Image 1 (cartoon, rainbow, N blue to C red):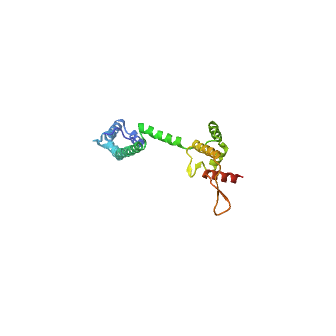
Image 2: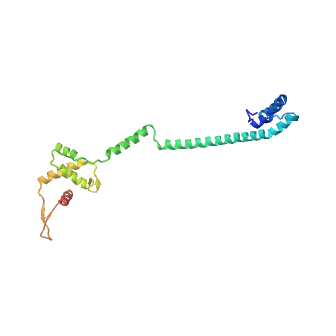
Image 3: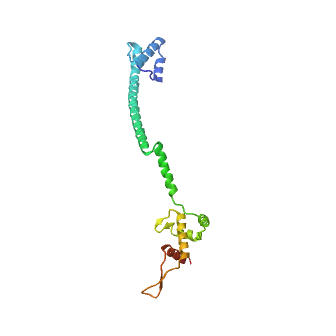
Length: 210
């Protein structure tokens, strides 16, 4: 049983000129066949009208049935595919994203990494630290020296500039306590001096500036 059917304007035009009693019989024959699938037992004009209308009703019913089956199959297939895709995406996200305490641990690790990242100090920061320690280190010289080296100690990136200041502080104290050791070179007449590697780098740097 169908819940409805298409009643075309051409049907109405064909029936409108018939006498009332025949027109009612024709309407009834068309509706019973279209809705219930019952072919009427009639003759005469009613039978003629029904034969004209029947092929169109059959064609419409076939299209409706095909559309219903195709639509159901399409929706079933689509829903299954979408659900499978969504489930897969959720599974991937759940694998990638840490949960609960794991999330906190990951964040803590990221914060530790960020906190350990070295940031070159300003001249004011170095000057303030040297003033607090009263170490006699020249802040401008310190900043210029390590800026020219890309803030590296030897070939390694600097991790703690305050530790570097304290190293300079010890070097300054040592320089005040000791005089340069002068040796005679056995092969030349020139004097030979012992230099600390950082001292030599400093002297070279200052020589370039001059």
